[in-house]
Length: 253
Image (cartoon, rainbow, N blue to C red; front, side):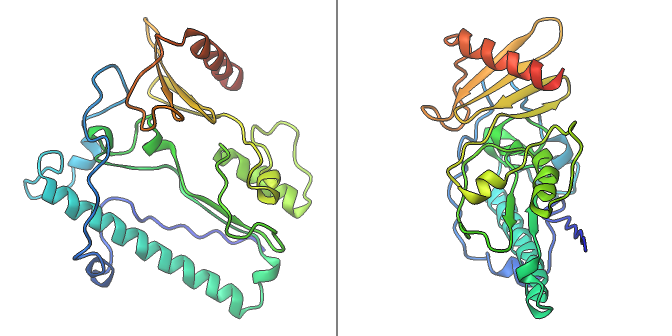
């Protein structure tokens, strides 16, 4: 059988049963990392989608107390979703299906909660593009292990095909993640994303963002030496820019 179960939360608005919100009433959240708007050209935006909701005149970009309220609500929505997933997993156990069922949990995108001065999605920064992905397969040897491999959501289909022994067409863009399931230390590949005429590629070490238009320009960030995507090092590393830009062209064109 195949069963797909969709959950909208933690989507806007950040609403969930009060009992989940109460769990975070006295939780102190850490300061927002990288809260400033980037100084140079970037895919930063003014959080228009987020701000179109009724905030009763409050603005998290100017009101730290309200920012913490919103982050508590976001966390409460995540806990609510976790609970629903737990119910599904428990039901598989009750039906005796856990040992013969592959389970995949994934999200369609990440989310800014004040990082880079953004509330929402629709950027090409790590916060917007790093999405949840958990795979559980019967008999897996590395249960509970995390992999740092860079992968893409287009890899889910060929992974399921490989795990189920189903023949797949040879024209798929994705790659099976069975190597990472068998060995969490196995390397991944580069990941591609694009939005509003801009494109990005993420390797194990770098993210390159290419701004289209009449005058092409680049952002390059080093996740090993400068985590957080706050220092654009494109001008100092033209060869890395050239190499990653060529990989974007190969993957998308």
